[in-house]
Amino acid sequence: EAEGSPTTRMTINPAGNVTFTGDLIMADGKGINFAAMTSPADAAGMTSEVLDDFEIGTWTPAWAFDTSGSVGYSTQTGRYTKVGRLVTCIFDLQVNSTSSPVGDALLSGLPFTTENISARAGMSIGYTTGFGSVPTLGYVNQNATTVALMVNSTTYLTGAAFSGNERMLASFMYYATT
Image (cartoon, rainbow, N blue to C red; front, side, top):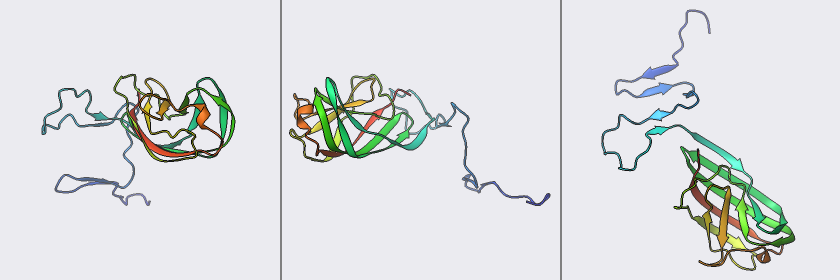
């Protein structure tokens, strides 16, 4: 830019809408404050009106077994979106080998530690194939980075269901600790 020739970086139109030519960057610990909102009334349990975090990223889903063993992968892909403390995850996990998996199977590697509350989020399983016992539901564990998988309402998915050709595509949401 030549000295003396102004460049518009922000405009405010007559309706009060603001347009920036660059990013709006918040200082650490700051966010967008919705406290001036008066209608509709805030819910009785409201704890914050500041949106202070947003990110999109990848994570590495994996199977963990609470006794021993492991599995190998041909596909191990996860994506997440975090808005405030609400985290939405999707993943595609395909097993191509096993090494004596024993015990309950847990989906591990969540991108953020889950909140320590008893009201836990469930998992929506979109597709599975190859499991000896088919997982039908999952729930996010408290204060952890794992999801428990179940084949029915009382039986957990275990290492015995893995033979080296399993695949799962699923999604879930949870509240992170921060």
